[in-house]
Image 1 (cartoon, rainbow, N blue to C red):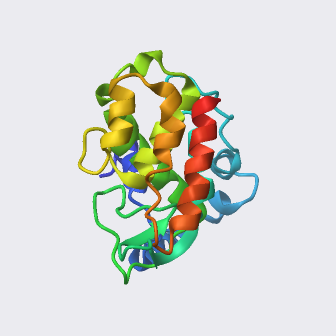
Image 2 (image 1 turned 45 degrees about the vertical axis):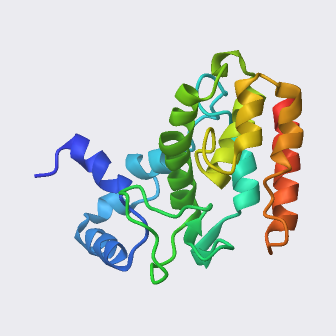
Length: 208
């Protein structure tokens, strides 16, 4: 028996797979027709968007929008530029931990957005809050800048290849951060132009 709590958890793993779609079709056929009327309470609630959240101690809204802009939404699996199977808004794995595979089915934009936000929070935002020096002294724009950078490059602080940006943060040389970001654009690669645009946007968010 699926309890109400488990019912909520059940839908967290929806990624638009073929079998999942078949399951939804089977559920549709089994539902009483009264539950399929447009004015049914559950349909009305499901269609009502959540109120826009003001950025607080959670992930800054500006950072999420920047990630969406530069990652771009793609329903089908694609090459991220360096040979990694990617889907949605730059996701390389699903909410259940599975890596994205080249043969995976397409997903919808709402699913992709939810994947991106949950992965950004769990895999990047939360670690950043405990590893970046002077985090609590930073503005929302500075935190958002680092979130976007981490989502694109991984957990960079103290990692090999990220000496300059790590030193800026360690030494609280905050004025140097926008310039340091421009060092990480994969020169000579097909993604260099796009990364330069993204780093400039992250730099502007840092100054905001």
